[in-house]
Image 1 (cartoon, helix red, strand yellow):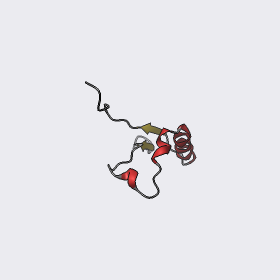
Image 2 (cartoon, helix red, strand yellow; image 1 turned 180 degrees about the horizontal axis):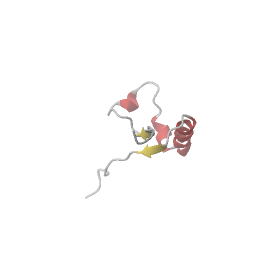
Image 3 (cartoon, helix red, strand yellow; image 1 turned 90 degrees about the vertical axis):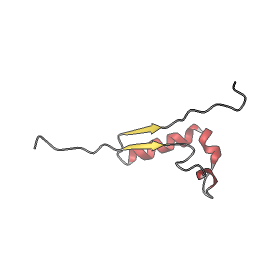
Length: 67
């Protein structure tokens, strides 16, 4: 063996949830998605749990009035 292997942990944050109806869950608070403190808290939790990184997912989207 060439050496010890390491496991890298990354927090994958998809703000709207990983299911299209996740925002409807009783404990969901959609307003927090626009609050930077929400993401800071997630990053702090990941750091405390010894995660190596945080990935903020995004997706392509256009408003209805874009032509």
